[in-house]
Amino acid sequence: MSVLIFIDQSEGHVKKASLEAMSYGAKLAELLGTSAEGLLLGSIKEDLPALGRYGVKKIHHAGNEILDHFDSQVFTRAIAQAVENTGAKVIVFPNNVDGKSIAPRLSARLKAGLVAGAIALPNISNGFVVRKNVFSGKAFADVGLATDIKIISLNPNSFPVQTGGNKAEVVAINLKLEAGRVKITAVNKVKGEIPLSEAEIVVSGGRGLKGPENWGILEDLAKALGAATACSRPVADANWRPHHEHVGQTGLAIAPNLYVAIGISGAIQHLAGVNRSKVIVVINKDPEAPFFKAADYGIVGDAFEVVPKLTQEVKKLKGIT
Amino acid sequence: MNFSRFIFAVYIGCINNLIAFRGLDYEIKLKFMKILVCISKTPDTTAKIAFTDNNTKFATDGVQWIINPYDEWYALVRAIELKEKDPSIILHLVTVGLADSEPIIRKALALGGDEAIRVNADSQDSFYVASQIASVAKGGGYDLIFTGRETIDYNGAAIGGMLSELLDLPYIAMATKFDLNGNAATVSREIEGGEEICELSLPLVVSCQKGVAEARIPNMRGIMAARTKPLKVVEAVPADTLTAIVRFELPPPKAGVKLVPADNPAELVRLLHEEAKVI
Ligand SMILES: Cc1cc2nc3c(=O)[nH]c(=O)nc-3n(C[C@H](O)[C@H](O)[C@H](O)COP(=O)(O)OP(=O)(O)OC[C@H]3O[C@@H](n4cnc5c(N)ncnc54)[C@H](O)[C@@H]3O)c2cc1C
Ligand SMILES: Nc1ncnc2c1ncn2[C@@H]1O[C@H](COP(=O)(O)O)[C@@H](O)[C@H]1O
Image (cartoon, rainbow over all chains, first blue to last red; front, side):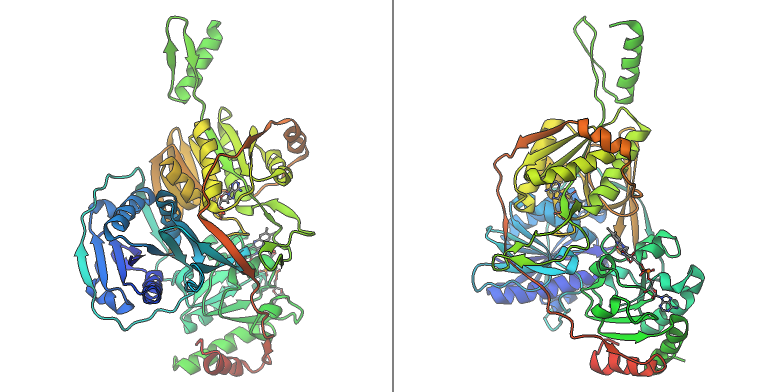
């Protein structure tokens, strides 16, 4: 009857989205009067019992070597076995790239209803109804699940990490697995940067910055804030910034605590990727820029003058010299 | 069969790694590579989002429909590029939808592709749609199936994964590059803060996003050609639905922007720190 949380990891380290998923799963288990258990696949470098502080009572760990490389087919088979072994009725995934690769497969395999991109705990007062974002963040849908097993894939940054639990019991499980067909040949990570999808603060620039040579002021602000950098689509299309920074309808959809938009007009397709941010700050020299309608705070002014001053003020606040 | 045709057929056969001689009459079975692209229809990106029937239905009045951008710009265009490189590739498009999906699938055919299949069914939920596409795929012997990363209305990002499971195939989600070399695919996929590159052999399912291809515009010739391309309508197979949308809701309107004078960024920092508590 338990809630089973897929703890996504990379190179032996648990991802932040998994901490949120565990916190969510723990709360959900409480709601359902059952216990939250974690499932971890592959070799791990972290202290597993310590993950209990996110509310999981037990962690099932399958250390099979095959699971050190991501393959959605193999992972799905592994998780399906673990679900059967544990008798879990609700399975929680972080809705990141790995979650998006596996949760739908598991849904089809187990014929278990899936809410992909959940943003809140289920309402169980009348059935089992989970809220998710639809229309690229422009609306919510409440999705009812009536299947015996239910799968929830939780959007990153939509549930706060909660700590306070005791040490988790770690159980090694042995899964029967065959190697998959996917052979990973290279992993290219952008060094030293905060991954955009996990960032709590994002500083983003648009065509208003005029050219790639002007990104220094934006990077300085991002550095002072401990933020990741992003950009609008024309900026990525013009190769002023790398493509993985492009946010919006056709780029990455993000939901940081703070999104600072500099020289971005706020086209609806751009907003679609950022409108789930908790607080939006807009800096634009045009008071009529549509972005101000979606903003919480704004400065009407020239980015080239405002941004360096803003950076100084942030540094002052943080005691950075 | 005359000799030159025989040579040609053997040549094509070698490309496709499959020559079958049957008996003494030298009948040759050719296996061309077949690609299936999943096409869905979505409201135009600027459409007003509103709901009717006590917030249980999307208000379609006055809404312009488009091909889901991920399906058009990335999945379909990449498949067309592969076919341009190797004209022996057979490219089919599939959509699950009622008759009102036809303009969309015709528009997709105008970009490229040999034939389209419409499964005549309302797209009820992800599993139902995936089951319909799986049924088409099983009958068609496709080597490669492309979907978009997600539909921009439902944002499920689910159908590609479900389909791959129903077909028991490998699945690469959110691909940013895709290349073919004979039967071997090289695919890059997005991961947190970077990309992962992998190799695997066909058949497989790939969901496509930015990077896989550059958008293109249909030309007049394509539009004319699409009129004569076959659009097959097949009836739905029985399939389950696993989910049901109970209700839609619009987010509460923003309270309105608080403007800070340009010469006082210190005030903005104070607000973010003390009021919004985000820094
Ligand atoms: C189907 C579709 C999908 C799309 N997907 C996306 C997407 O995913 N992401 C995306 O971003 N776009 C997307 N777009 C494009 C989108 O419609 C806009 O064209 C784009 O977001 C505009 O980018 P921008 O704001 O950087 O540039 P602009 O619209 O050119 O805006 C520049 C802004 O900078 C301001 N400015 C100029 N100089 C200064 C200065 N010195 N100081 C301060 N401000 C200044 C201007 O007032 C203006 O508001 C999509 C479009 C379509 C049709
Ligand atoms: N009704 C449909 N018919 C055909 N393909 C679809 C349909 N709905 C979704 N798809 C495909 O599945 C992808 C992911 O959709 P979704 O899981 O709904 O976000 C889309 O980008 C399409 O390629």
